[in-house]
Length: 485
Image (cartoon, rainbow, N blue to C red; front, side, top):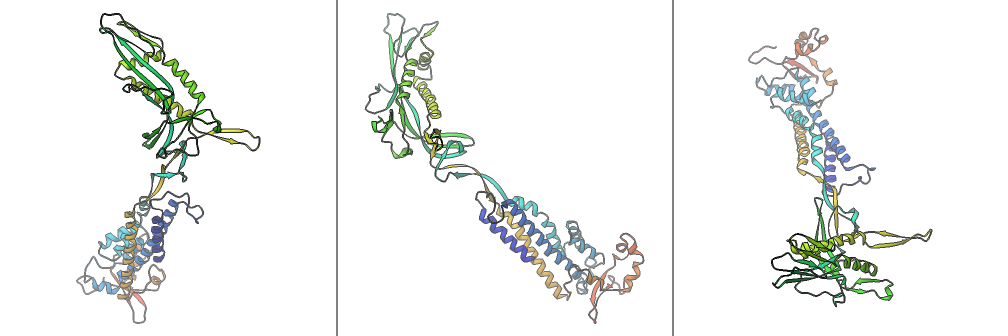
């Protein structure tokens, strides 16, 4: 059993070493779908049962050593070290469970070799707690999608770069002039001016095409801004921590060109995209003419109008123009308002402007369009990992070493006192001769509950070997007396 105990403990350590800091496996290979936690519990149970069997065997042998005549001669009249017949019951119960082991330690005052075995029996009962603390499963970020590409729907946590369409906006940029035919080849869909006239001493008006002012002899104050909005591609480093999405701008690109006739598309195509933007080379990034026409018409409508104010009222041709005027005259600033508007348009583009992949059915020759959003790079998601707390492995290891020490010392003591290895066998007790003085105290004690304990349990005895090879029990001499009890 000792070999089983040591071998199983070694196998348990090897199993935990193999899976430590790895993803929890769905099942262990070659074990019929057995899960890791079940295998750990099974191995710990085998270690506990085999270790307990070894210690119980040695503890049963300790009872014969305790009452041997040589052991009693070494006690040198010590009353606490004197063996009594009731001690057989103490050793027997100690080899069977927790309470008996505690009673043995109390009886021997912790000064006998059997107390080591009793302590092991007590500590073995903590194996269930040990097994639960030794291995835990922790949620850690783990890489997903071995091909480096994954959809936005299966990402729990990511640290990747990806490119998306975005609306770029500019306002109040030191007199910079934006034109749709600009050599920068940007895909402009809105270029408009903001002109503001204000009369000293009165509230001013603001508009994108004209303005109103109150009459005064003082010269009016004139301020103007030119705003432009265009499409671009931007690359972001995306991460999710504690459920919060974080995006950091890495690079952007705005150069476009009209699609060539060979491309059979009516769009502004982004060209000469640098590799640093991490775009998918198999896909084409473009803005269709229809989308540009629709956006230009929409922006022309919302950015045209006038606002006039006086001390009592504000009159505007549309809510859009009034909002821009309010932003330009408040602490928000026109540039911030335009940037916020661009972010709103970007969100709409990113939601509904995903890349489309056409698929054709071989059954009815029908085509469908699947929308997906992919990210290039590495991504992680929370995954259960095996975490082995190796300090808890000292617990069974220390008990196994203690059990080996206890077993070897019991074997050595048996050889020294010339006591046969009877262990917990019942037959040796049947064939041991009992002194007549002990028999006289029994009477009808065998028919009374606990009668033997009360009648002869207190008698001090010593086990001796006769010249003919038989073994027997006789009463030991009383302390300080020459007679028998």
